Image (cartoon, rainbow, N blue to C red; front, side, top):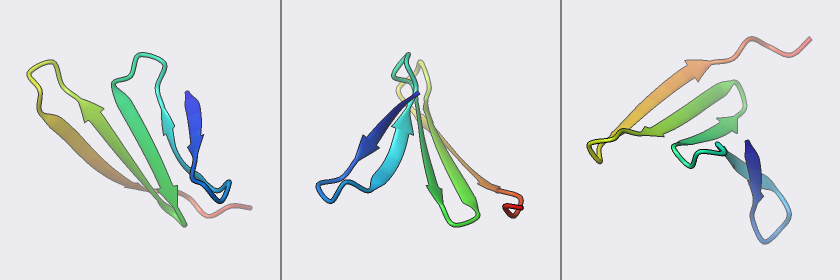
Length: 52
């Protein structure tokens, strides 16, 4: 995964090495966007466990 930062230096997302998946984490939610071979997108939202 390669991390991407905005102009303020804040991390906004991670991109997979095969350029098919982007992951965005905000608070306790992970959004994963996957590019399918047919050109459609699969969008998943997952609650993350609280940090210890």
